[in-house]
Amino acid sequence: MERMTGLDASFLYLETDTQLLHICALIVLDPVADGASYEFAALKAELGRRLHLIPAMRRHIHRVPFDLDHPVWIEDAHFDLDYHVRRAGLPAPGGRRELAELVGDIAGRPLDRTKPLWQLWAIEGLDGGKVAVITKYHHAAVDGVTGTQILLHLCDLEPGVRYPDPEPGDRVAERAPDDLRLAAEGLLRFPTKLGAVGMLPKTLGMVNGFWQRRRNAMKGMAVPFTAPRTRFNRTISPHRSVAFTNSSLGDVKEIKAAFGVTVNDVVLAVVAGALRDYLAAHDELPDSSLFASVPVSTHETTRHERGANKVSTLFCRLYTDVADPVERLRLIAEANAGAKREHDLIGADFLQDWAKYAPPNTFQLAARAYSSFKLAEKHPVVHNLVISNVPGPRAPLYFLGYRVDSMYPFGPVFHGAGLNITVLSVGGNLDFGFIACRESVPDVEAMADAVHDSMRALLSAARERG
Image 1 (tube, rainbow, N blue to C red):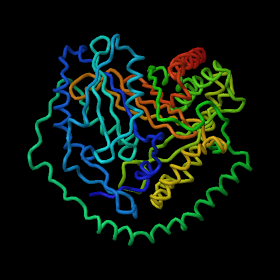
Image 2 (image 1 turned 180 degrees about the vertical axis):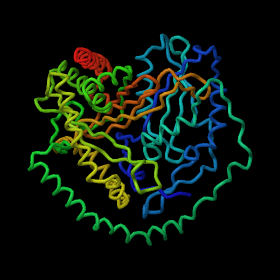
Image 3 (image 1 turned 45 degrees about the horizontal axis):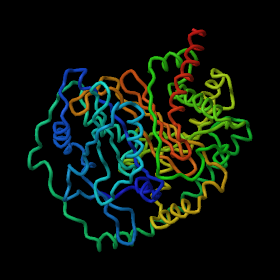
Image 4 (image 1 turned 180 degrees about the horizontal axis):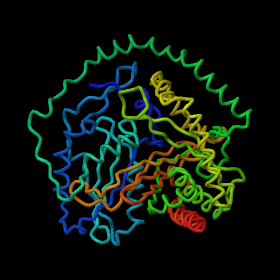
């Protein structure tokens, strides 16, 4: 048994029927490339042989009576691999659009909280003999880094690897927790919630520091609640539209070297160009810049040892109001440097420190009210979208024995920010995953297509400069 951290549990508290807080990935496999013979039964059996390496995939949540404390993780005594691993086929011709529609459908379904919070779908019938795997994990169990680590347990550096069956003694059944004891412990821990009062001086000091930096005209993070409203800044439905594409990591590094910026600066500038083109095509480009919430991993810097989610966030201005792509990249890089300095002032643990004081009942009621009354449409826009850039492995990978052709990530979308763009570097590619509320962005594939024009504009400028 392991108690959830406040940050992990917050993803349960903030989830509603329309705001589904799980993370998905689309992994396209190419068995034909190695002359392998794909079999669904073999893929599922190999997954079963590796589950003992990933304890989180056999645990489910157990609520503390009356929500007196954060839930605990316990091993599922009735774990059923057949429930979690599913099989589907695409209708001919099995192309990109049909696959995207299926990913959107799976992403729009909630996970059953009485079971371990993950699913894996094997999708057959793709063009060229390829096979797709769609994974889905709840954000309470993984973040970008821990999710990538789970996938790496299921991947190898060579084809056809088969793990031995685990020894019978590798797993010891866990006894169900005593609810009376959990409730008593929750009551005893309740006074510690008052520790939030001790966070107030630090928070006020941080706000004052930001104010002083702005008075001195120092650049830093974009200011929340000042973003322009767009079509994806409204209350969301449970329906999802999905698109995906990839670009060369070598092109990104060429742009990085030519302009003396970071890979993350280039990724944000490419996405900003795609957003500008998309909104301009709909005659909806705001006069002021969009800005994004950008998750930042704190796994290497946090003092907290427990928990799947170790993350904070930057608010980054995207300069979508600037037409010239090179000037836009320069401004993004300059603003990001100031934002990182402010992030360091906040500290890696600020979000986790606050989250541990989250009262479960209050948060859950607030999330439902916020959704039901469509409050996201009644206050200034906090931020326009989420953009996440996750570094992945550089070497070619084989997922449960089959070659990985590409790996597209999809994060959650939120009320008021119904668009998420997640980028994962795998091998020599950058794989872009776009997911949005379908009613707000039904043509999200047009946004994904615009990535290539945005990338070409920066690459052409880089080569002229070089």
